[in-house]
Image 1: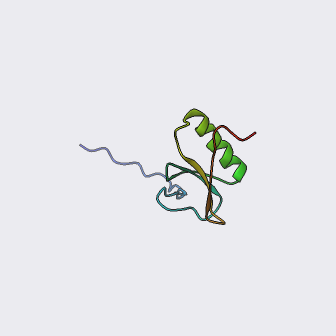
Image 2: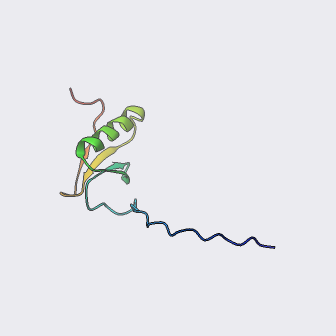
Image 3: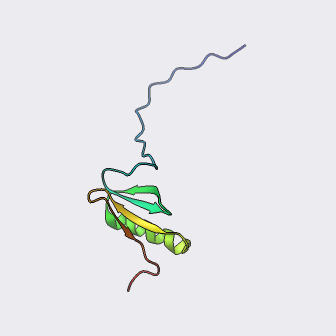
Length: 80
């Protein structure tokens, strides 16, 4: 005998960020050609990219600016 499903309140729709499409706002990390994480400021995106680059130097990490549709490379070690 099947148990009846308990109906719960409807949850608000989640904000889904697709990895295969370029974002339209903010800044994103691009790791080896794939969009990975979204950030509101360029400083936050660069900090996350540098943290990733410090752990895995072999990755190609870029910061994508949605407003200008440009990418800037994260260099390791960080320029002094």
